Each structure stands twice: as structure tokens, then as C-alpha cells.
Length: 166
Picture 1 (cartoon, one colour):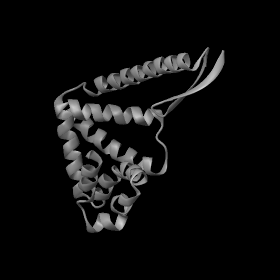
Picture 2 (cartoon, rainbow, N blue to C red):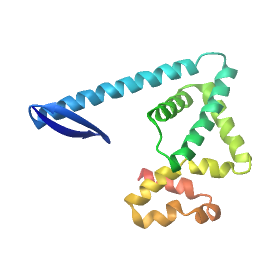
Picture 3 (cartoon, rainbow, N blue to C red):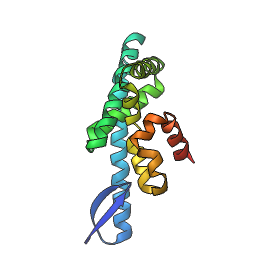
Picture 4 (cartoon, helix red, strand yellow):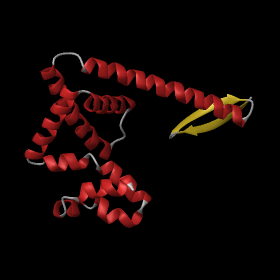
């Protein structure tokens, strides 16, 4: 058997297989199993976040929103660990599916914008995506990641989102 290096969704697998086609199939199966395990872990975390009354879930929603903002800042300087990524996925799923969590998350977002530096905190959440887009489309780089433009032109982030959607 030969060793093959197979990459699926930016994850690399080293597989001992008789041929390249078999190696791809085995790596794909392993990747699917890994993704199912991650989804189960996220679902378990979200289920624990849904426990309690609406007030508790609203507070968890506020915390989840702020935690995702902080992970966005962390991602600017460091790679996120798989545990960080799982937490972000659980927070996003909770904020998307739980009404009390949405209300709490919205309240935290409004409060963050009202505080000094809150706009910068919320904008930083979008910077990793802007930096990736700037690498893919160098002509847009000055529009996407120039801090001075963010201060002068506050519609910068919605503009970036519209560009990313097209």
C-alpha cells in the first residue's frame, strides 16, 4: 500500500491505500465522520445554552454575541483553535435559533455600538473576511482594509458585505 496526501476543505489527510481513488474515498469518509462529530458537539453545546427561562437565555445570547466579537479580534492576530471555532459555531447557531438569545444578542450589539470603541469592535469582526477578499481581489484592497477609510466612510462594512455577496 502507498501513502497518499488528500486535502478536503483545507484539511489534510494522510492515507495508506492501494490507489489514489481509494485514498480519496477513505479520506472523504473520515472527513465526513469528523464533520458529523463536530456538528454533534455543537448541537450538544447549543442544547445546554437553551436551558433555563427566557431571561437566562437572553443573557446567554448577549454573552454569545460579545464572545464572538472577541474571537473576531483574536482571529486578527492568531489562528483560532478548533475549540474556539466550535464555540463560535455554537454561539451563531444559538443566536440564530433561540428567540430569547436573539433578543439578548441584539441588546449586546446595540450596547456595544453605544460604548466608546464599540464600532471598532464590531468592525473588527468583519476584518478577517475583508483581508481574505483583499487577497482574492487586489484591486479592492484599499476599499476593504484601510483603517482611515473605515473612520471616514462608516458604510464601509455594509459595502464590503454587498461586494462579498456578489
